[in-house]
Length: 382
Image (cartoon, rainbow, N blue to C red; front, side):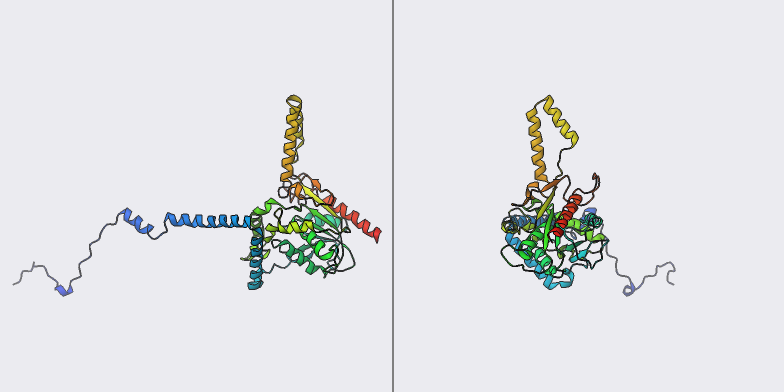
C-alpha cells in the first residue's frame, strides 16, 4: 500500500513557471532613470541664453540701422494686415473720430480734436474733455494705431478729415507723439506751404502740443514697458487677443521718435503755415522744493556761496534733461515758434490727476484758456 504520508507531486506539465528573481533598485539608479527622461542643465541654460543673445544681436543691429529696422517693421505690419485682416482690425471705438463731450450732441461739429500719444491705453483726455465741456467747447478725439509709423498715422487722419463738416474751423490738441502726428498732418496734408491742400474739410486754426518730443526722446528706446502697460489695460477691458500687441503697429513709431531720426529731421525742416499758431506745454518734475531752496540758501550763507550756486545750477540742468520723465525740456521747442510753457508735472501728470498730486493737472487750465482766446480771435476775424 502506498504511503499515505507521501506528498502528492503535480505533473511537470501542470507546474507554474519559476518566478523571475527580483533585483533591488538602488536610489541612485532610480534618480538616474528619472533624470534620463528630463533635459539636463545645459538644455535649460541654452533655452535662457539663446533668446537673450538674439535680443542683444537684434538691439545692436537696430541701433546702427534704424531706417532699415523701420522699413522692416512697416513691411511686417502690412503683411499681417493682409494675411489676418480680422485679427489686425482695431476694436470699435479705437479708430477714427470719437465725440468726447457729455453736453453736446454727437452730430454737433467739433471745436477741438485731441490726439493721444504712443502706446496710450486711454483716459489721457478724460479730465481735459470735462474741462472743455465746462468751458462750452465741443471736443472730439481721433484714435489711431499709435505704434505705427508717425507719417502713416498722419495719412490716416487725412483719410478721415474729409468726413468732417467744412464750415467750422478746428483746433488740434496733441499729447506726446500726438503732437507730431498733428504737425505732419497740418504741414503736409491740410495746410502745406507753397502747395495746394491735399485734403478737404475744416481749416485748422491752431495747434496745442502737450509734452510733445519735437526733437525726439531717448525714452523711445524703452517703449517695451509702455507696451506692457497697454497689454494689461487691454486684458482689464477684455480686449485682449493674440493680435492685441500688433494692432497698434509693429514698433515703427519708436524709431521715428528717436532724436535725429529721418522722420524728425524732415519734419523739422518743413516750413510751417503762418496762419496756424502753435503753443507748447511741457513738464518739469525735478523742480527744487521750498525746503531744498532754503537749504541751498543756508549753505551759501554758512559755507560757500559759489558752492550753493553750483549745486543749484547742477540741479537745474539735471531737471531739464529729465524733463517730465519722458521728454526733456530741450526737446519741446520748435524753431520759429514761441518758447514752451513749462509746468511742474510729469508726462501724464500734465493732463491726468495722479496719486499724491497737489491740485488738478496743471496743463488743463492754460490749454482751455488758450483755446478760448483763439476762439474769440476767430469770431473777431470772421
